[in-house]
Length: 532
Image (cartoon, rainbow, N blue to C red; front, side):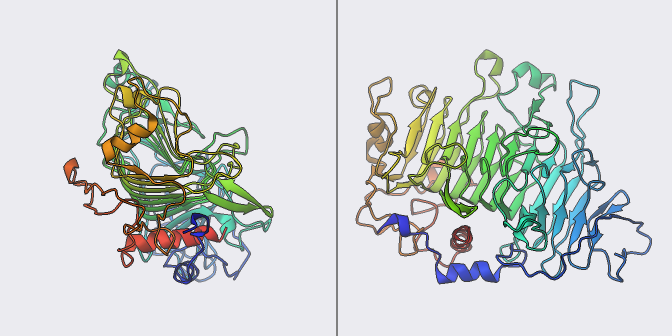
């Protein structure tokens, strides 16, 4: 089986994308009306419904007497309603709009009041909740248009399999695409959630005094605290496409991620998510203990999953694919690390309350390329370990079938990455490395163990080379009947953790599970990625 050809969209998968499910982003949107009403309506609630000026009820979100402008199909929210200078302090709801209507934002959507607790403010623990209902689509027009959730506030975006929620670029819709280039990475700034969980970016003394205030990337806001059970809201059945970059108007921005979880606690979870074509990382954790499950990340420029600052969460069923996209008529490569796994920003006696990152992660497929990312010219690798990362990694499949040009590898240790093995507890279980080149460094650990011996873990894992048959005929589900496999999946029962589903296969998706929603979610995500 030639792995480089496995991602051709099947007829079934393509039909899933073109037909769409409820609030799916349209591949070829129909243009009904290119006019946009740039005013926001002031409203009162006496009549039980608001008039958009055209005899139809205004279906746009509202708060504090402000409401979006409804043109009969779409809702636009100008800078009076939402911007980098406006913090929304009331709960607000975005509903599904009929006729594939879209909620369009010109500026940032800041939920809750930001607070540096070393000043005179205090965190509002009963801050506002933003609710995004099944089938709703929120689209953004610029790199400075981000979603930022303050500590004490919540973002609840809970869709359904048939009606997923979409956060995307306004350019995904021809009626909003003024230039006509279509959507691409960095079209908008992404989602930043600030929690009150534990991060080793703060000292123990700061946590004890309630003065842990770590500045976030992008529009500066603060996160961190001492509650790893913190709840900042949750997401389920959500698509986050074409995000990243940062504020581009009025100053330089940071390299923002599609979804940034800043010290978000275990009260929050992120499930059934598809992140596509982000500028920086797909999901980045800075401490906390939020869980993720059933996540697909395709064609993100930097790292698909970036772990840092003491993340203590769980993850299962992650499908990661690096590939290419077309930009200005040129095909460019996307993807650095499937994982960038960092343990700690700081360590020592002052940080004893905030241990290094030590998550449990299971059932992962990472497909790399031999290309260099258009973002920074770095190679595509499956995972990089640094800063004493100590995760337990179960049922991984890592694939690299080609190194024709760049001699890239699958696994890399940098800086203090060896410490996770030498002084901690970093191991793979029930995993397969199907890579032409396996390790970037041909060095040993302090005890003389080679990289290969460490990965093999006494025969629990295996290295099968880049020409092995890994996937079934669909090109993405693990073929557990492959003659190249002898490894047995870890059923995860030994974790004694209710988060994890018991499994009998390695990788993210089983070839014997084609009728499941998870199989269909991955199939549709890969078909959508092929459209770019």
